[in-house]
Every structure is written in C-alpha cells, then in structure tokens.
Length: 354
Ligand code: ATP
Image (cartoon, helix red, strand yellow):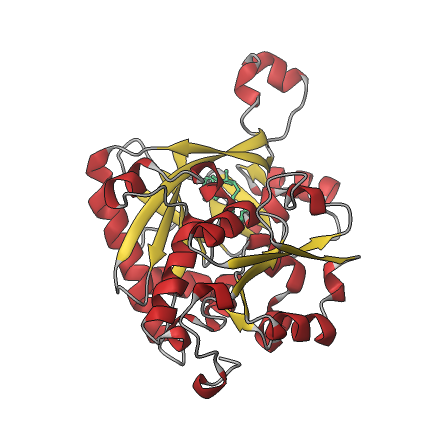
C-alpha cells in the first residue's frame, strides 16, 4: 500500500472523497454507483471522449480531467488526484493502458490488491493459482507438435480475444500461425472445451468478509457468434477462421443448481489468493471467473480477471442475484462504492486499499 494508515484521510463523510477512474470499459457504472453512494466522481478521459461522462452524455462525472493519452499519467496528475482525496477504481482498460509497473508505482489511493495483478497477468502464475484453487482447467499444450485434439490458440495481450484461432492438428496450427501471426511467438495453446461460455462475476468484501455472486454474462464475439448464421458449406466456401473479437456482453442467469459450485469456486480462488500474496490481503473487490460449461455440466475455468469486468455492464440497475440480496439497484460499480463507504465509516480504509 502506498499510503500508510496515518497518511489516510480521517474524514468519515463520503463527500470528502472522490471516486476516480479512466473514462472507458465500465466507468459509467463505477461513477454512477459512486454517486448513488454519496461520493463525488472524477473521470480521466482521453480528449474527445468526455461527452460520454459529462452532462452531454450520462452525467456520471462531477469533474473531468482530459489527457491526450493515458501515457500522460504523470506526477502532476497524481498530485491532482491526491489533492482531491481520490480513490482510483481499476478496470480492464485501466490496467491495460497503465501497465502493471505504473499501477504498482501509483501513489494515489487505489481500491484493490495491486500484488494480485502480477498473478493474474503472468500465465504460469495464474495457472498455479487456479490449480491450487482446485478448479477444473483446460489442458495446456506446451508444444504445438502435441496437438491431438481441437485447441484454442491465444496470443498474449490480445485485447478482447483478437487474433485467437482454433486448430486441430500441428499442421493446421502452423498454417494459421505462419500466415496470420508470423512474428508473434507469445501464445498459449489450450484444449478447446466444447460447451457454453459463462463468465461469473463475484464480489469479495474485506469489510463484510462475504463473497457474493453479482451476475453472469456471456460475450458477443465476432465472428464466433455469427458463423452459425450461414450454412456449413458456405462457411467452408468463405474460408472463415473463427475469431473472438469481443463486441458486447449479454446477461445470463444460470440454472440454479449450478450456484453452489460457482460459490465454491469463487471462495476457493479467494482463499488461495490470501496464501499466495505476500501481504496476505489476497483478492478482494470485484473479480470474474471465465468458464466454459459442458453438456455434462462440468465447469472449466480458463481465466481469472482480478477486477471489475465489462460483463457486469448490463447490470447498472442490478442483476436478478443482487435483487435478491439488496433493496436498492446494486451494480458491481455501486457495490465497490458501498465497500469503500463502509470502510470509511468503520475506520478501515487501509483494508480496502492496495
Ligand atoms: P479477457 O479480456 O478476459 O482477458 P481474452 O481476450 O483473454 O479476454 P478470453 O476470455 O481468454 O479472451 O477468450 C476469448 C474467447 O475464447 C471466449 O469466447 C472464450 O469463451 C473462448 N475460450 C477461451 N478459452 C477457451 C477454451 N479453453 N475452450 C473453449 N473456448 C475458449
């Protein structure tokens, strides 16, 4: 944690704090949720995108700081944030734009455990974390020559599944790899799990100690979700390669009998995260387990996202699950703000900052 306890603001009034994030990804629900919980809000926007967040758009930001590029994140900007008692909420684009090293070095108050980002971003470490948590995982192929069944090939840092492809033999792998990605050798090869994708959104609060299932989504991907719209022979004729570029998110409600298993998986991932982080704080706040559910109802997990995911965006007004637990519309963004509000009220701010 950058700030020590004595350096943290003593106020117990949410109005003395500003919830801040980069204007992108899930900023709308984060800022809306913060306002609903009585905080002031700030969006750091790339020039030209401000109107989404100010009164010309959805009016969720009390204040906007415009930057030419997120690489302009500098000491001066940090000082502006510190001056305002800003608490930064990381989201997917935030981490992607800032990079883990800069996040680690940030001096402003930051919601979440920075240390866990390393575990999530390093494929080997993430796999160890998932294995220790007892999750069912797709097989990993270290060498393309081992491919003996359908696999999915994932390029590192490929935002939103861009460039991923499916192959079922070493020959097919090399054909696509050499043609489409000749210079990129940073990839992982995973068994392709036949089933439906289910992204489970959790919230672990250090304040209540509880884990909550907030919602589920599936992704709307181009062109994986369009291939079935034409006949198989036309697919072959058009020589379409399956790709997974994410375009949007679709809410889902899972069959109720799957809920105990999802709770168990989320709990286990949180428990192990406390063992693997040096400060023992582990993973808290919003996170997502990205899964495929097979026809035998086995749940394979292929990724942990240790922060709010864009799949929670359809639930600005809450989900069927949060409606069962809360009597106000509870988005994941608002749940973050509530956690911060309760931490402030209970003099436990240090517990939720990384
Ligand atoms: P994120 O933004 O979460 O990092 P990403 O770009 O890493 O996403 P993934 O979530 O890894 O992309 O996956 C993209 C697509 O590939 C999704 O539709 C997912 O369902 C599918 N997928 C990923 N791994 C497997 C697998 N082992 N078997 C079948 N489908 C998979």
